[in-house]
Amino acid sequence: MASTPEFQHTLMKAAGFSGTSLHTGEKVSLRLHPAPADHGIKFKRKDLPDEPTIDAKIDNLKMVERATTIGEGSMRVHTVEHVLAALSAMGVDNAIVEMDANEPPIGDGSAKAYVDVIKRAGVSAQEALRKFFHVREPMHIETKTGAMLILLPDDNAFRVSCTQAGPNNRFTQFLSTDIVPELFEREIAPARTFVYYEDVEPLIEKNLIKGGSLENAVVVRGDAVLSKEPLRFQDEFVRHKILDIVGDLALVGCRIRGHLIAVKPGHAANAELARAIAKEQSRRNALALPRVVPKGDGGLDSEEIMQILPRTSSRIGYFMSADDVKFRKPVMPGDTMFIHAELTKARGERLAKAKCHCVVNDAVVSEGELMFTFLDR
Ligand SMILES: [Zn+2]
Image (cartoon, rainbow, N blue to C red):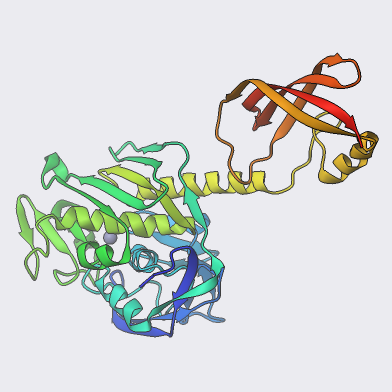
């Protein structure tokens, strides 16, 4: 569907479906609407006065207990991860998720219903370029509960390699897959939510999951799997873990280019990684913006450089050679580079040598000794 991966995409038309809300057990309708470029994904609560919207962004994260909840003020949207996973993996960057309750219909506990709606609406490219987060250095999250997430560079894909393990390492499963529309639709989206009986027993007693039933989750009791229909994949649980990862990381708000190694992941760990990515992303954005340069010989803007250049206007410098050149660190678009040059030798009026080094974020990225000559204009 997404044949032009460098451009943002939205839906071609609105489409929706109705179902049951997991927590309240009430009927809820969901409708996906197209949205302009750079809009991102927003949820809209049709059931509230003034129909407020909220950005599906990690800054709005409120809860990660069993499902991912975002909120603003007193408004909440629960269980956003499956619809976000579907939108993200199917290549939709901009959309409004309109609902008449505080959470989407749970469907069969998988992301299949959302993928079906997206396919009915159709996906089309927009004119703006997509925003990517390229992993440059490994990122690492580890939680007390034993979840471990390691994000490694991979410039060409978003790949997830996941190991899931239940209590006492029951149902240990592994799967590695690229997150692309065709594979997601076939291999990941149909994987259903699963719960361990011991975890949900108190909730059922407290009546906290009214819409929960064997129709929208697989229940694991001891070594037995209880579900309305047989397992859809022999390793359905790890597939659902990948689905949740894709949904939670969609809160970053841009496309990830990297390879995620996930061991026993959960919403809390996923959210922590999403936060770390968003933080790194805004650090990079800050560097890309014009920043205040130190006074004195610290730095010059283009205007100041132009004021100095005329001094040499009667003569032109010609670059002759470079010695002892070392490239120490990669420099990325958006980095602010300070070039330090110290005149070390001047032979007569014509020949000079300068020791130069370039600094990005207080680290020397390259250095060398340059020789040049001056010629009259
Ligand atoms: Zn889930």
